[in-house]
Amino acid sequence: MATFYCRSAFISDVHLGTPDCKAAYLLDFLRQLRCEKLYLVGDIIDLEALAKRAWWHADHGAVIAEVLAMARRGVEVTYIPGNHDAPMRAFAGQDFAGVRIALDAVHDGIDGRRYHVSHGDEFDSEHIGRSWILLLGEALHRFICWSNRRVHAVRQRMALPYLPLSIIVKSHIGKALAYIRAYEQRVASDARERGFDGHICGHIHFGHLREIDGVLYLNDGDWVEHCTALIEDHTGAMELIHWSEQPAALGRASRELVLPSPAAALAMAPLACRQRDLAELRPAA
Image (tube, rainbow, N blue to C red):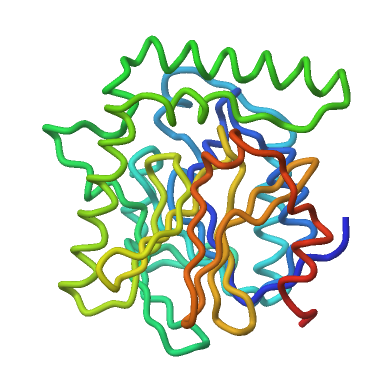
């Protein structure tokens, strides 16, 4: 794949240390990525899962090594811990090998727009639950993730592109979609009250780019189910992209136009926008 140029990149919910993490796709993305700023928006290393079960793959260590290599090359790397790597919040304000730890951040877009950046678990109130997972039942979610791994393994052997099975389920359950929409509204309302043009987060494993009452809600998705990242190009436009064997652009928001396309579209339609299409969307740096 060709080198992928952008100004800023946002990734979250990688969950290194769990079998469901698609570290190989993320590693490929990071190795192709050329950016000035990289935001790690929480749940990068799943310390919660590792405390229960020690599990690690070589690709997971390679992802960490690649991030540190980017920092050494001069990329401004900001790590905002989430609820699954919450112990890292104790180190807020410190710098580790060029990676700055912060509870949240303000991102100034090159086009003048200002974004609040946080993991997003603070908008997940206790009476609703930490995520849509609790609406479906934890056991069902584990089964979905297990099925996703098996389907992925079979499709790889057949040389077929990645298919996010879990998002098909998530997109066809009314309660899950209602939860997602309510979450998006809470995030956008907070950004509006704080005077930001938008909010960038993760947490709910549902990449989406949406304008809500004049405020941009930008969710960068995850690398467990959907393999998505949010990037800012050199005009200031924000794009949600999927990265696997067949990279695809899922949505774009510039000052002039917002073209929302939830990650659900990845499972419902052919990946017509391949890497060659991504290259056409932005100039080389």
